[in-house]
Image (cartoon, rainbow, N blue to C red):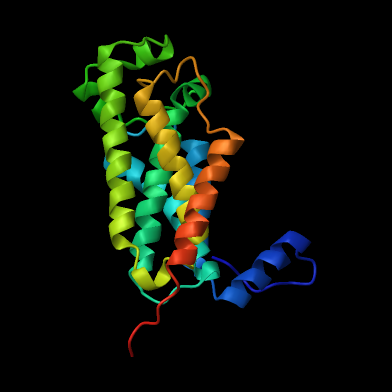
Length: 220
């Protein structure tokens, strides 16, 4: 639990508490984020996607739920937008970082998915790139794209401008996912990222869309 401040509390902790007070940030979401960090320290494998989803919710969706409190929103449906976008972003990270995570003895791809596509942990360790691996990764990419679609559907029109920072991040990650897909998931040999010009283009595009969509007021 998050407790009241004390005089000997570290400066960073005091800053965090001031931020919590200023924006009325939900303490339960902050505790979810901490729980997600603890999972990263203790959990190296996930048997099912439902288990992985809990992790993604804690390290990404909960961050989104805190962020929208700072951005400001009118419609409660914006919370579902934050949840779905967080899942999409984290799944994209997992796809991109398969080999990096394996080098740290972490496998975020659900064990049930490896079994579904008959791709073993041993093959992953040996960086075996084959059709079964591509099919496994295509399955993960479809899952990520569905979360992106869910987020787009959940974003209330009146909150589009306020969510511009989140939409910029979502655009960059959609572009990253698309690049990995088009390259057939060569994550064992490549470190995928968008260059500065590509990122700048997506930032400008989202800012332009925000300019064309002035904030709306919800009816009372």
